[in-house]
Image (cartoon, rainbow, N blue to C red; front, top):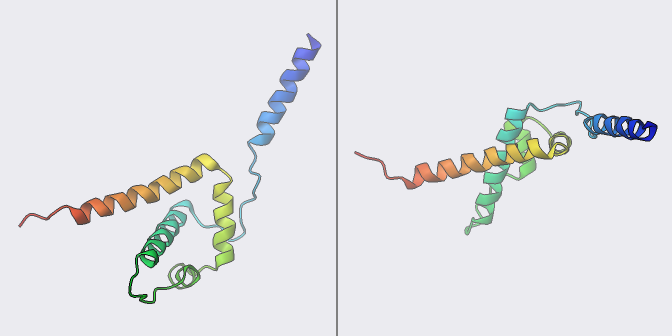
Length: 114
């Protein structure tokens, strides 16, 4: 009986210990909605660059972060790592980006009525 209680206590301690974030919150924290906006812009930028047959100059991801969001790439990387440490939440954020992209594709492919 004592062994069962000991196993239960160890299991409970392990469960509560695992709930703590392994990656600490960054000093320059980016709020979740803003992070989703950044992720969206980065995805669109990469898609444009991969489909750019004329090599029209587009900003680099670092330039986008600096000019539009006034953050550096290290701040983005630290926040990305922080959000990615909670895989379920990170998947929801990525799904939000994908949903927005798909919604915009549908809006542009749907003819407007006159």
